[in-house]
Image (tube, rainbow, N blue to C red; front, side, top):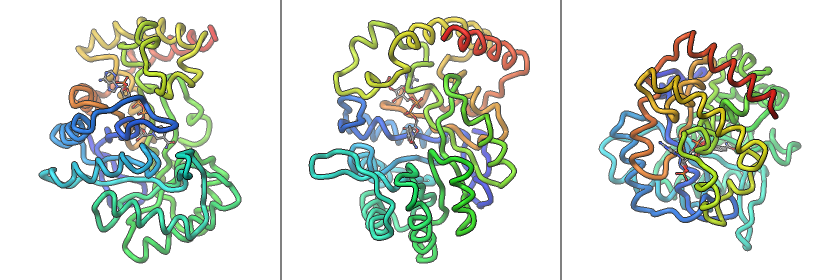
Length: 320
Ligand SMILES: NC(=O)c1ccc[n+]([C@@H]2O[C@H](COP(=O)([O-])OP(=O)(O)OC[C@H]3O[C@@H](n4cnc5c(N)ncnc54)[C@H](OP(=O)(O)O)[C@@H]3O)[C@@H](O)[C@H]2O)c1
């Protein structure tokens, strides 16, 4: 698998990382029922396929995703790089709450280390910049935790350029984790260039737009999603976007096929075509899924394919 360096750090990441949101199981922003054994098998399969890093977060499954990663690490023959996130917590009613207070960040870090069963988090990321006035306070505490050896590098997710600049004055930002897929390209406006100029890695999330770009979605599949699958709430899965995206996917299919590849791989390799992107974080709920998507790391799209996809995306945008 191809490797790219994480920002200014000495970490070298495979360009496909494993995302573990969905495997956390049901909660307010869950993906419906999830079998734990299948989740652990997916994590181990990703490592066997050559993936060398895993992205998780405290809030995924309200701690359960981190616990499953911890379980898998006990069984793994080699240890991957571990990235997790703070700032999203849950209350007694299991509702998501945001907090960037120093004492909360410290407590979260200790809880995550315990669930993961590790001594040091390789990459600790602020999940969302909310409440915005507390981002410096959280970052200062994370820098202290790094000095204490609890964290190796500090990253952010869902931040703007202005917010990143505020943190850079305190401690270097190693990475930004933004959404990036054929359907959501805002990051191309200024974040990619800013990050490249400042040795900040971009690790892109939801490259397959939560499964929508894999070619395996249909109106029937959407109708059969469990009622507690958060995708039911997402505008990408509502009209007119949903039907327009299925039409786009059918136009992309021949491009994948003539390369002997799948649509899931095409959506990931498309994200990786940008040199400013260090890696794509790819979600999987069972081993077969990550075994299909991991090889996207080794596929460099050619100029002709990139140009044809660009035309299709312009047409797609014009429709909406
Ligand atoms: N920082 C943030 O705010 C943030 C936000 C979102 C995501 N993330 C991170 O990024 C990771 C990836 O993003 P994501 O999980 O939202 O989206 P994604 O990677 O675009 O899609 C993952 C989903 O697609 C489906 N899938 C996976 N492989 C497939 C295959 N080979 N064929 C068909 N379907 C397949 C699975 O769902 P089904 O099988 O149920 O369809 C899977 O859960 C997350 O796990 C998380 O670590 C971070």
